[in-house]
Length: 232
Image 1: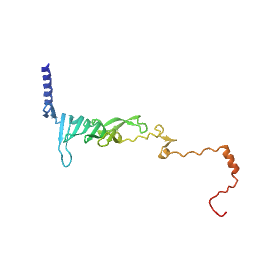
Image 2: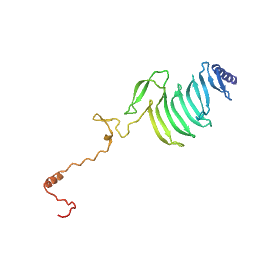
Image 3: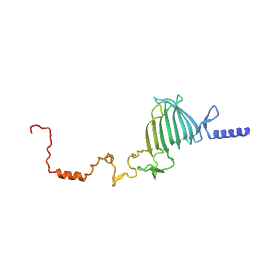
């Protein structure tokens, strides 16, 4: 049984070596930084960028597929501290991206990768009135990584949110305030304005029969009003 496992492992290694024109081996025998006969990056890679012209250096590790980043990638500063966890598809950012500062989460981004082979794509656009209602639209692909979803920003050194932003296919989305009637955004065919949301003045109560009779009875009487003047 052990011989079968060893033979299988050797076959896998030979297959990896065969497709790699250049590569690097770790101390444990793993293959890194493989380039195939077409000079395309394949498999696990570690990359080190030294500090240059004031820009901090970094190291990153992840997987390449046909020279494009795929799946989860991690980035570290040259001291070994984690600074970013990014996710890729087709070489573009896809899903949640996390960025760290001084060992605490600084902010999160949300991206949507688009297949670069597509010139057009079908997307679901939320309704501006009801965000739970969506409409399918066909768009021309002009970018292959779009801001899409909730972006979160945190107070340094804690997990307290300072603000959030919501993007829908690269556009900042501002939902309608909860106090407005989402189901009826217009009144008598006229769009609701800020004036419509101001508090209304209290209505004057209707006059009773007794009040009307008293006004009729005293309407012709002259009532002398004291105004503070002297010398009557």
